[in-house]
Image (cartoon, rainbow, N blue to C red):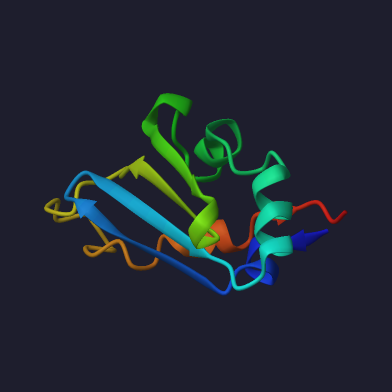
Length: 105
């Protein structure tokens, strides 16, 4: 089984505020984008356990067909302002998403 990183051109994460992280995933190939989008793997039910969250903590999943991209916003497990936060800018959170298995056609 392939991983999301095998399909995507760019994967990145960042804080959208101190309490939420947003993930941006871009593709340079329409077939790869559609395969990932249509796989059913980009859902709150799949992503929440990956990050140790509940389904309702996945705040939104947005597919942008005209940009060959999708965006996911999730609650952070530790706020950026908390001294225990090890990724203050949220820039390393996409690594688990990159390893997400995507079924091949």
